[in-house]
Every structure is written in C-alpha cells, then in structure tokens.
Image (cartoon, rainbow, N blue to C red; front, side):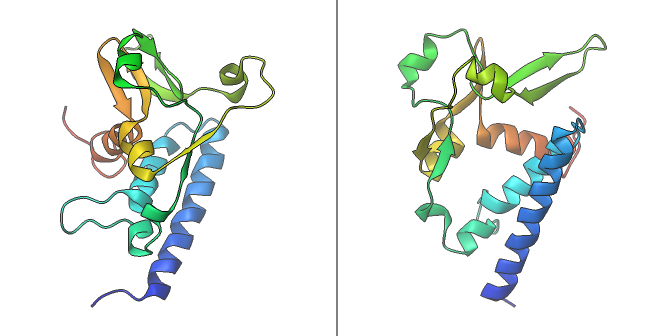
Length: 161
C-alpha cells in the first residue's frame, strides 16, 4: 500500500529531528554520529534504482530546492590543478592506523574572514559534482562519502573490506 502524503511528511519530520540530534552529538565529540548522519542524509535525499526513493523526492521537493555549498564552483580542469583540495572535510590519520574524515571547523575554514561565501546549487550539482575532498587522485563528492559511510563503514552495513 502506498504511503500517504501525511505519512511521508511525518517520516521527514522524524528524519529531520534525528539529523539535528546527531549533528548536535557529533559537535560534542561523538564522531560515530557521522555514520548516523550519513544514513539520515541518504534517507532524505538519495534515490537509486527503481525501488529507492528519497523522502524529498516523494514529497516532490528535491528537484525544486537549491542546496547551499561553501565551496566555489570549479571546472574539472581547475580541480586537476590541485594535488590536495579539502574545502569541506579533512582526513585525519591516527597512530593506530585508523583514519576518519572530519569537517573543517568554521574558524579554520574562514581563515579570518567574517563571512563564508555561500553559493546555491541544484541537488545534482551539490550531491554528485561538488568535490568535498581531494588527495592526489582520490576525490570524493557528498554522494560518495555519504554512501560509503552508510553502506560500508557501519551506518547501515559494515563491510569486510
């Protein structure tokens, strides 16, 4: 049976509350909340195959919305010029050989500026095209990092590799 608009809206409200709580907990130092954040983000925005529909798509909103990005639009040629590019997240390596992606603090990102430039992009551009991490030839978009955290790092599944 198809869900009603009301049920979809209630599910959206719950996911939004979960995202808010997980972000608050993450900000207190509970880094594992990044796994739940990625899973919630996927529930809200990721569509895949013929049976995976995001809440924003079910509400008819995703393609009508603009998403904020704190990173300027770069052409593929511009991206190639950089060996390292970490506009939104940094890779931290620890002595025990584990690593984690950590969002750059606003203070560090702003580097003394009073405001952070924000541009607005379509969902496609923000999710699939904006590079949020680059180290040598390895690059990640929001989609890639969200799906990796959800699908292989313990958000919804934990893979052997």
